[in-house]
Length: 231
Image (cartoon, rainbow, N blue to C red; front, side):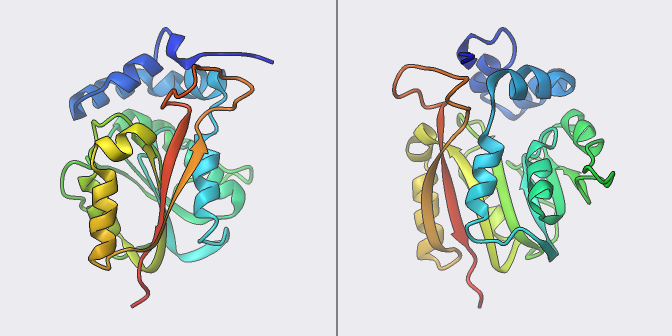
C-alpha cells in the first residue's frame, strides 16, 4: 500500500486549501495548470471526480441528452473525462482559470473527440453570462472547498438548469455548515426552486493511498444532490 498525506505536498494542496480570494485562486491555478494532473491527481489517488459523478448518476442516466451536462469548475477536465467515459454527452465546462481551461480543451475521448463541447471562463462570484435553463445536468467537484467561493453562486447555478434537470455539487464537509451552504440549500428548497434534496458524503482520495488523522475534513466531501421541479 502506498501511503501519501496530501498535507505534506510541497506544491499544491497546502496552497489550494489556503486560497481566500478569487485572485489567490487565479494565481495558484495559473502556475499549477500544466502539472496539476501529475502532481495532484496521480500522486494522491484523487477519486473525487468519480465520487461526484456517481452521485449525479443516481438521478441522471449516463447517455446522450438533448441538453448539456455542465461541469462547474472543470479545471483540467478530469470530471469531463469521467462524464464522457460513462456515456454523458454533450458536456460543457466553466472555470475561473484560462490556463486550466487550456489544458481541458486539449482533452479527448478514446475515440479522438473533444471531451468538452464548449468551455467558458467564468467567475462564479459574479453574474454568470450563460444561457438560462439550458443544462440537463450540473456537476461540481473541487470548487466549493475552503470558503473562497461561498454559497451564493449555487442560486445562480440553479437558474442554468432546465426543468427536470439534476445537480450534484460537492462542498467541503466542514464548510457546508459553517459557510452557509446548508442555509442556502434550505432556502432554495423552501422557495420550490429545487426539490428532492439529498446530502451524500463521498471520498475525495483513495483510502489505500491517503491516510490522515480521524476527522480530517479534506478526506470526505458532502455532495448536494437535487433536482429542478418539472413544472
